[in-house]
Length: 216
Length: 136
Image (cartoon, rainbow over all chains, first blue to last red; front, side, top):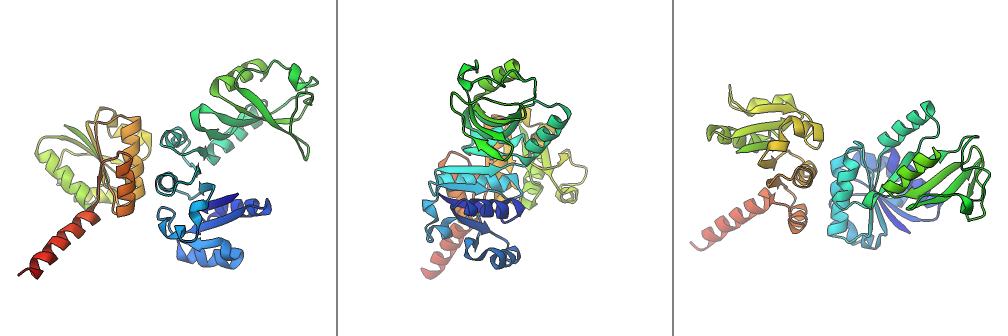
């Protein structure tokens, strides 16, 4: 996959390293020249100097074949416009925006951004989970009210010690992965959930609500 | 008419002062308190300090009852974001954003936003001026 990441802050850099380690082709765009010089020393030619809203110049380098653009600057308004420009002018199929103010998530999706990630919201939920275990922590919001979230199973959870196929899971809800210790289990019908598993699920709003009502 | 202006920039202040003199009801939002010095003394403009892409700030400026929204901060991206929020979230009938970058201006005009691009205007003016001189 070819990914363009805009914004060379901590989020951008670590995302670049993470994706490169997974074998993806990544281009990091940083607009501030001082910061860019620092980054080049560390990351070499994966970094280019440029303004994320002026991707035009990057198109010469073949950036228009990017599969995904991630706008990870510190300013919500920049991230929105970067994603929109990528869609409108350069036809990049998927755009993801980092959002600082959680209130902007829904709006950004209405305006065409495919997915939003709000650290504020995730951290807030993680804190809440410490206070109230068994909470559904949102990880990523997708279009149409669809969300990926995680929840940790307690020893008295109604979900454990049964095959997934036998669980009466709600409509519009699917378990996509199970984090068990250091392993990631991709679930099948005969997978059995255990206490302390972290379940990652994809669900529509109604599906998530039904799941929370039934099992959390 | 109730108008919310985002950005007490030179153009924002000029517009606010004029609208008030024409008996319109005006609120101006700016992150910088100091920028309100550009408004006429003892003016009736409502001054709101804060980020214009923040719903709470927009509401404080009375966006829910506004008939027009003008985004004229010094940041193209802020103007474009705020204008889209005013249009999609608050359904303001008359929304316009100042965008200096012609490329961004064209892109967002294409998706149905009202844009005022001073760069394109100025270039047109200059073109007219230069061609007139040549024909003398």
